Image (tube, rainbow over all chains, first blue to last red; front, side, top):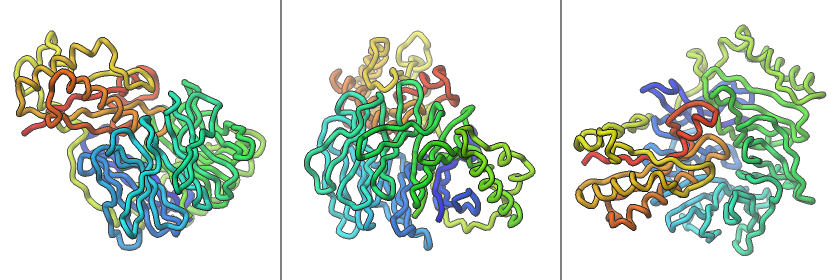
Length: 266
Length: 191
């Protein structure tokens, strides 16, 4: 079991660079799997833990790569005009949900990794991004501002009606399912503070778990008991974990300065 | 290394157990220099296999000074061409009236100089989620692009990219920093 995250070395200097690293769940045994002076974003583990999808701006615009961890072999799977972002593996590991803006506004697409076929899932004129699959692969949740502010929506992974899930708070984004599919974790904002919240899918009630001003990128532990997320204090990013009832908080300590976008591996 | 790892693993377990009754961060034991001094990611003694790719690219503001070489009007503070950053309100991609003059000036320059190309680089502040901020940054850059096109600038002189919150102009988590980071930069491209 491990985590992936992005870190910045030499922040603010000419030698500044970004690293995509994987490490044990406690931050030990870090290995750099990609490095660039341009931004790296959105690491996502394949369900078997053998590959990583991520976004890199190394060619001056966004592209999505899939890298095999054991060999370092890397494929560029999406490089369309505009946004290529937010890759998310289907639970069976055959497809990536992703965000492309090649047709105008950002929409959710599904890329079949073996046939390379691309299917457009959402068609709003607003921002649709941050797709995440339900554990059974039947549904995809995503962020959309079609109602004016970013909120969480759900759609069948086959396409069809898109239904709004969140109604509390002026900002709900980057949702993902718990391993049992009963809860969603998300970034929940009220205009000032952005915190990690959990939503019970059965009654849609939202429980805010953290107290930071700028908490983001929540990711469930494989056993569903803890949520890893990124926070900031004094301008420096760090990682924390919180139990799903919000009662246990734990900051993880790294020596490398800014650490962000944690993703808990399988 | 091994010993340190064991100690920290124990410290984490202990902190988890002792934190059951409240939600405060229990990080004191972990930030103690004696525990983690040799355990960090940049520790030269870590034995992770580096399979990373070296990637080439520009520095953060690689093209920042190119525009100033185009002519004195780009450096004259009284000329709107000297202003190459357009700022935005929170969660908004609407161009504020203050910046219409700047956009018009660059539009006129591009129309008069059809061999010049710009990249409109959209950015956001650090709050909220990163991929949503990428989308918001693109919306901001496209707002500026469509105003330029409406003024007659050719589409092939305009390139749009969004860096979201990934390339802040100013570091810091306060409104003073955030308002400087919600921006579109007009970057003239060297030919």
